[in-house]
Length: 195
Image (cartoon, rainbow, N blue to C red; front, side, top):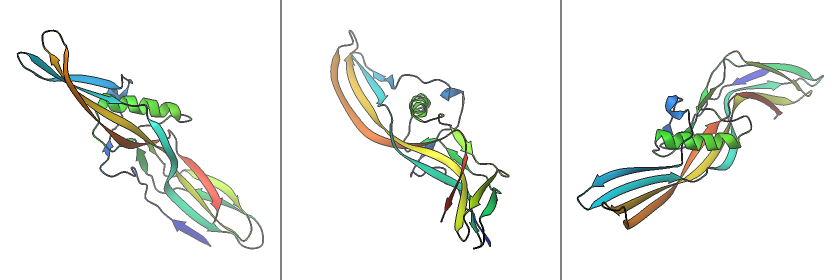
């Protein structure tokens, strides 16, 4: 008896996530800090600086886009073949508003911690197949999906008021909050297990 179960791939496991598709803006990994002048008066200049801490890996999960379950008879081991008839896509994302430059820097840092690197977007393919052995009398499953690294980084925004004449710091304040994201591996994989 063969039981087919299809699971929809979940691209992002975070609420209010911002998705960043691959583009030329993401090609380079710039500095984690960016300063912009927001206002200038006759005596003062106001600057906002945004910085990110090095991303930290939180966990690694498997995002399944296709699953098939088999039942072997009780006489002998069975050689089963899975064949995906669905495609799914897992995309790099973070749960906060971040500039393209900041996103590229975070992505590059996260990718460096993943064996084989990360991808902006990884898809499973229709028609991909995989064969494995099932012990006699056992139920087993095969899944096609993508390994996803969940990470966190701290975003610090600093507000500075400077003397316009000589750049002397007159006042400063800052806020820091933690943001989370997910980054898929570059290729999809099959896995199998006994239920």
